[in-house]
Amino acid sequence: MPEPDVATEAAVRLSTDDGILVVTLDRPKANAVDVATSRALYAAFERLRTDPELRVGVVTGAGERFFSAGWDLKAAAAGEAVDADHGPGGFAGLTEFFDLDKPVIAAVNGLALGGGFELALAADLIVAAEHAEFALTEATLGLVPDSGGVLRLPRRLPPAIATELLLTGRRMTAPEAARWGLVNQVVPRERLLPAAMALARQVCRSAPLALAAIKEITRRTEGRGVEEAFAAMRGPGMPAYQAVLASKDAEEGPRAFAEKRRPVWTGR
Image (cartoon, rainbow, N blue to C red; front, side, top):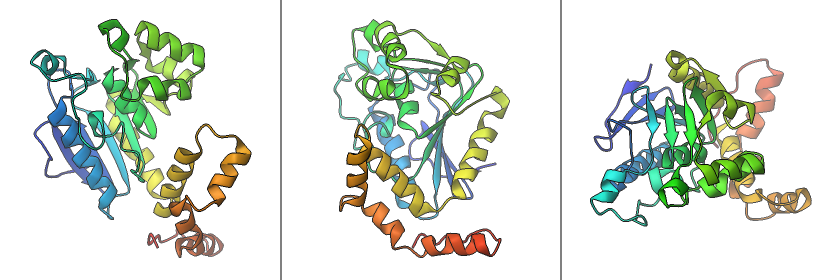
């Protein structure tokens, strides 16, 4: 299991396990996120980005009831503005962290509501406990899910389903989310973190430069036609992709396959 590490802030606990950074949001009772917590989460994801020993991030919530209830409405009632500056990564440190070139897995341990759902949507992969539920409740509170929900959800779900969730705020169960392809796995609650870690270890077996290039290409070609996307990928604006083509790792992978051994990635 992950080894405890130094936390960036009391509400955010970090641990590491063989190249995997586990980020645990721990703000009883609902793991709600205020500005300070957003900035602490960003610091954690920035560490993932800059530390060459770290390959994959896993973000989860403490406890079994809430992954995150989203924006801390008590902080809002105390004067935190709806358009407050949550730091370089946007709300929850990840929703606008567009140049994070390492994969993040959301291990959703319970209710992911509002900004909590937006945090999960900002991850690359989602593993959900069987009892988890997802909802964008902002419209029922007179708000808009503008930390990625209104933008990402229609890209991840059939338009009619995404629009229904956005307009009504209804909760989607983990099995329904799996049926629509929103989550990668649904597992019993006691298997959640082990399943997320197993998935992270699978990702870690891939070459780090290739992972960065895949994230870059998918991000920069989203919404484009195939021909236009090919032109963009082959053009000069994909430095991570170009780095793969010129890398030693691109030589190591085929060589290791031919020699029937596991490749040794150097990130060069």
